[in-house]
Structures are given as C-alpha cells and as structure tokens.
Amino acid sequence: MSEAIARDLMAQRFRSYLPVVVDLETGGFNAKQDALLEIAVVTLTMDPEGNLLPDATYAYHLKPFEGANIEQSALDFTGIRLDDPLRQQVAVTEAEALGELFRPVRKAIKAHGCTRAILVGHNAAFDHGFLNAASERCGIKRNPFHPFSSFDTASLAGLVYGQTVLARACRAAGIEFDNKAAHSARYDTERTAELFCAMVNRYKDLGGWRLAQREQEMDRTDE
Image (cartoon, rainbow, N blue to C red; front, side):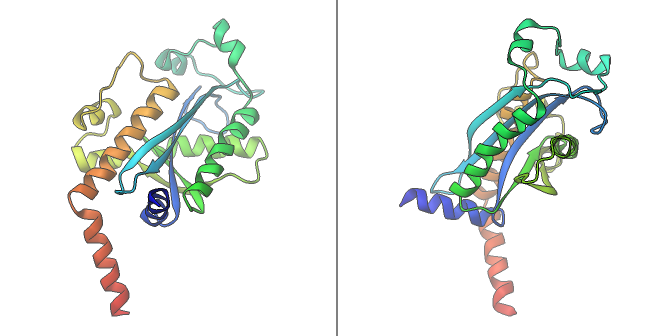
C-alpha cells in the first residue's frame, strides 16, 4: 500500500516525469568533438510522505570515441589520468555505458508510474548536450530522457540558498562536500542528487507544494 502511494506521488509530482541526476566529466566543452570520459547517474525515489530520496547510483569510466578531442586543461581540472592502469581495465565504450545506464533508468520510470526521465544536473545544459551527442553517435533510438527539458540545480540553489557553486550550495544545505573527491562523476552526481532532494523537500516542508496543488485545483474548478 505504501509503495503504491509513493508511486502515485512521484508520478504526480513532476507531471509524470521521473527526475534522474546525471553528471559527466569530459575532455572539453564541445559536445560534438570532445571526449566523454566519465558518466554517472543517480535514480531517485519517493517515500509515502512525499519526500524525494536518492535511490541507486550507476557510474562508468569511458573510452574516448574515435577521433575525440581531449584538452589537457580539462584533464588537469578533473584529475583524470587516461593512462591509469585501473582506468584502462574498467573503461567501456559510450555505447556500452549508455546501454547499461539507460536500462535501469527505464526500469525506474516504469516502477514509479512515470512516462519519461527528466535530467537533473548542476549546470544541466552542459550534461544534457553531451548526453544527447553521445546518444546520437551511438545511434540510440530510445533515449529515456526528455530531449531538451531539464532541472538545473545551479539555478535552483541560487534561488533557495543564494549559492550556485555545487560545493557551496551543498554546504548551505547541510550536505558534506569533499573538494578532494570533487570532479569525479560518481561523487558529483551523488552530491547533486542530495542537493536536489534537499531543495524539493524543503519546498514541500514549507508548504509550497501543497499551496501549488491548491492553486492548480482552483484553476481547474474555474475553467
């Protein structure tokens, strides 16, 4: 019973979209030309009280696609070492990673009674552009994510906490943030997921979501 309640609440909360948190580490800023080096996804769920919670994390190191450009400045910023033996052992192709990532995302969409995933990211346009470009390169026909809509936690955190930098926004929300671990796709995605959940739940706890529901109901009554 409680699972059914949580499922219905999630389906209603974002107009049947399931928020899925994504972070990428890349070889530059050009989604068409620069390599995608790391990708991580955190699916979200909801409890019967309507609180949004991180659910499962999926993360991969990627082999650069053939002909990809990699800026040294990007590697210096992220700390990624392409010649690291461990990385070379576990790295997979874009097609392999996206296939493995999209499978649990589709499963989560169905489990929560939703129709599609919507990307959540810190500076989401960047991640969305690279994700779409990689999907196009791999010829993926059934991308579970909405092609252009997203939730940007940098903008939301600026509104809620007056902070747009991920580390500062997390600290403002009471979430521990380790700068030494930052710029790993897995770490940044998990912190972004916690931040997004904190902001959505804060809005609910302050009565904003209930007020929005009442106002929408009034609008439907007046039609």
